[in-house]
Length: 72
Image 1 (tube, rainbow, N blue to C red):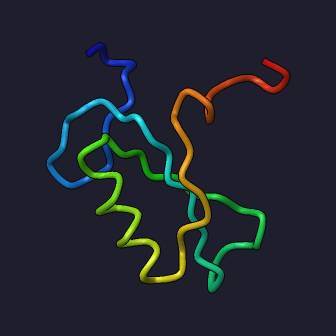
Image 2 (tube, rainbow, N blue to C red):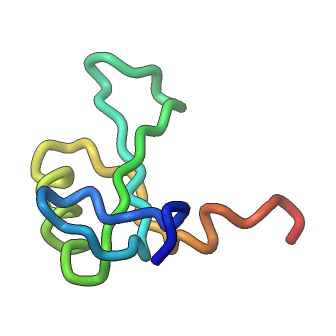
């Protein structure tokens, strides 16, 4: 892992991120705004459930697809 490697957003986790969890809090964000958390394989489900229970989770996408340039 380099300093450029995105890491998981789970507390205390230093694993490389594989997933992007796109979320939005409709109480404070416009509908099209997307905040992101990164997740490793181990924490994807836990973080998704945390956001999902609160009605905030909008999408779960592979990091490599999220970063891909349009038209690639």
